[in-house]
Amino acid sequence: MKKTILSIISLISINLIAQIKVEEKQESFSIGNQNALVVKITHSDREKVEKAWKTIIKDFHPDDVNNKKHEYFFDNAKFTGVSANTIDVYSIVQPEKENEMKLMACFDLGGAYANSSSHGDIINYFKKMMHDFAVKMAKENLEDKIQDETKVLNKFMDKHESLEKENKNLNLDIIDYNERIKKANEKIELNKKEIEVKKKEVTEQNKKLDDLKMKLSDVK
Image 1 (cartoon, rainbow, N blue to C red):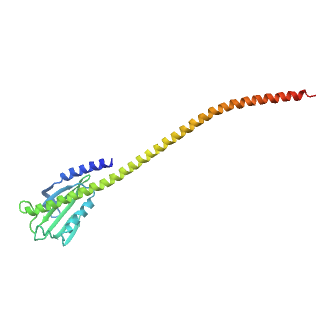
Image 2 (cartoon, helix red, strand yellow; image 1 turned 45 degrees about the vertical axis):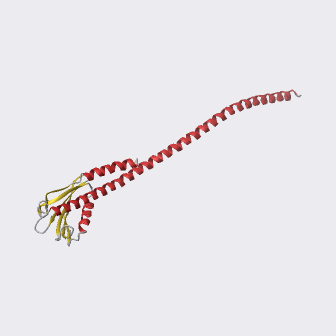
């Protein structure tokens, strides 16, 4: 049963990851509408997603990190693998619906925001970064759910095992009780025979006593 549930969740995980797409579109930030990359993330905890994204970008050593109303600003991050210049990153994690977050990020290259028509390599670099991040968070989210559901399953299995054990013991009790009933019935039948014997003995003994009493009364 446990394997079946885990297999179903694994299939769900594969389907969710296959659906992850990073799109390029205009989004609203504190600095106005900007060209941005957007990805939907299967997750229910906004703070966890924000914290994880912050950890990712901090690996690129920004000079400063500011957070205002869930918008994170990373100043002068060093993405040396794709640019010799520092890049400012603006990002927002926004709840979309139950168990889904939307991560939006725009990248200030210093006078221009990254876009596919002018900065294809940079956009592709960040697309991969955001896709990999979304996959990571989706997997972690599902792993958490697997742990939660496994705990529930274990409780069900423990209760099932307890009931099975109880039924086994009850069946053993029934066998024991039936054996006792059988022996009691046999004992009853033996007692009936003994009762008849004793009843006869009592009758005979009473007769002896009566005879003796009569003899006693005849002695004068």
